[in-house]
Length: 273
Picture 1: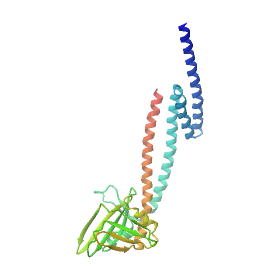
Picture 2 (picture 1 turned 90 degrees about the horizontal axis):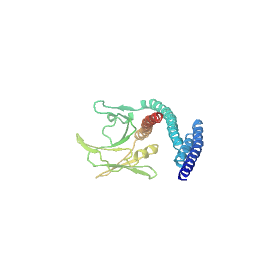
Picture 3 (picture 1 turned 180 degrees about the vertical axis):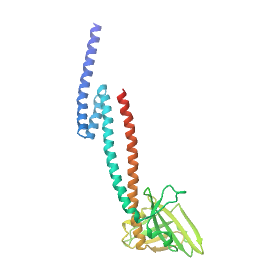
Picture 4 (picture 1 turned 90 degrees about the vertical axis):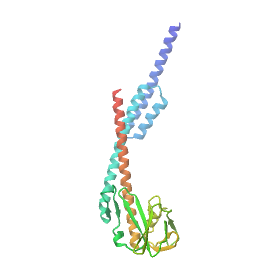
């Protein structure tokens, strides 16, 4: 009697397992159909549902797991193609505009060079107080507040104000220095994008207006930005956006490539099972 009962239970279990596998197989086929028409989102949804709804459908789950890697492989391939195409377009844009800037790089101690606007080369701007802008090859923009005068003001920040009263102000710079050249006091303070109180973006968006610059230090000093300096700020800011997007695309391509290598190893592992 016990033997008959055991066989009955075993048959019921096998029948239930077969039923679960068949149900999971139907969902797996739906996933394959979605994959075939390029609907990767739907394919992954169906695959994930198999894992949730049929945890004991081991055969279907193994096949679904392999299919998921195939979906991700193709999806990444499409994404890489788009990233590469976009990168090429932006590189072409960079090639067309970078001749408008001067490129500075000392190969002996610099790994990354910088672009500046021709109107702001130091040789053309001796003995005057102004804001100087540059951007490195990765897209990181920097601003230097330069002060030249007969006395020190010991400034560490600047405030830029538009005619309507709106303004942007840098936090105190952690990279500043002072020197004296033939009785002329020279002070410089550097600010990089993201730590500049949005001053560079503010100048760029208001480059067509008269902007007042206040040097914030122990003694007051105010000047007005020359049109050439405002134009330089806007041009360098635009270049920084382009360079930053290129750097971001290059990093995305790198990460996508690493993920594709990982998926390839997983697919090889599935085929060896």
